[in-house]
Structure formats: structure tokens, C-alpha cells
Image (cartoon, rainbow, N blue to C red):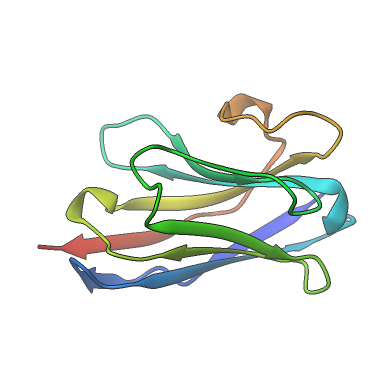
Length: 125
């Protein structure tokens, strides 16, 4: 089992920056592919950013490219999402997710085995 705990969500203004953190416990963090997803009211959960188990590969949704940066510190069992130039449309609950690191990076939520409880990000205009 893997336990994931997100933190860092807040109410901010458009143009502000925010950093989310996801701390994992229960399994070897460096064996896990990780991802950030988000879900806005009335919308499906969608991937935001992905990172391979060794941090060597990343991928981003088109809507956040150039504004968000995903990273991880395997020594601290923690993943981050640096969000810059936030927009009102970034408002959502942000979830971190993990899956076994043997496969490819994927944007499909169903293929992630472990999820955090979510952290709310609200961007006011």
C-alpha cells in the first residue's frame, strides 16, 4: 500500500504562484511513476503533469505547459507541482496519484493505483 498526502492548496489571485506537495509513504517512492490530476466541479478528473519514477521523463497537459513544473525528490519521498501564472480556469481539486514504475507514463486515471485525498486550489480573477 501507498499513502499519499497532498498539501499546499490555497485561494490565490490570477497571476500568482503556488507550490503543491505530495508526500508518499508505505512503499519505495523511487519505484513509482507519479502524477498530478485535477478535477473542477462538473468536470472529469484530468491529468495535469506526469513524472517518471526516476524523474527522467515528464509530461504536461497543453493547458499548463510553460506555467507548471512537476518535480520529485526521491530522498524525501515527495513530489511537487510548481504552478506559476495561475488562471481562474486552474481552479480545481488537485490530486496526486501513483502507479508502479514498470510501465509507461499515462494520463489515464484508471491506471493509477494510489490517490491522495486532494487539495483545493482556487484562483480568483
